[in-house]
Length: 190
Image (cartoon, rainbow, N blue to C red; front, side):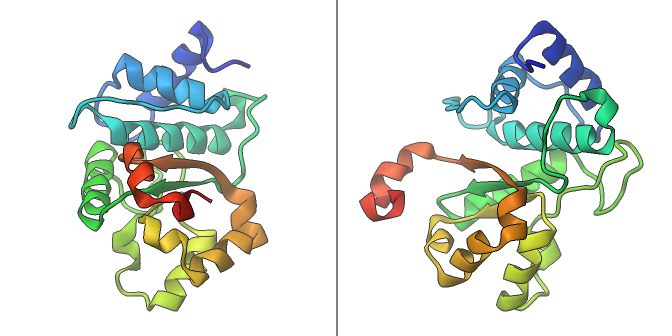
């Protein structure tokens, strides 16, 4: 099955109609998500406020819906508990993205009333956890993880990456403010 096709676009629109997504996605978002689902790397350069967060939200909503109902796309091969890792250069940007995701598809954790699929967990779920517990929870639960580049270089995150369960569920990585990879330096890009 090719997501970047007329049938793929139709399927995604059908899937999203039955999710908590509160808006009609832009064509460029659907095109980008379809390319990503086909395994093609995506670089989306769009103006501020144009819906970049939607790429991540839509991607995960589609994936979770197909996992919950494999008859939607029997040939899709997704991890049973997928994880999307989004790297944000600043904490305010992480918080803004968290807010945007919750506004785009507002449901409470484990609410399956519209989509029949589990809701991704975001940072509010972890505020009461000690730092060590956070890394343990991160290996198994959240479907979308928002983090900063400094965390990727931490010893705790290295342990998460080497965890077989987390590795098996990691399916995509996104960078907000992708152009900052250059200013983060060569040591980050290794």
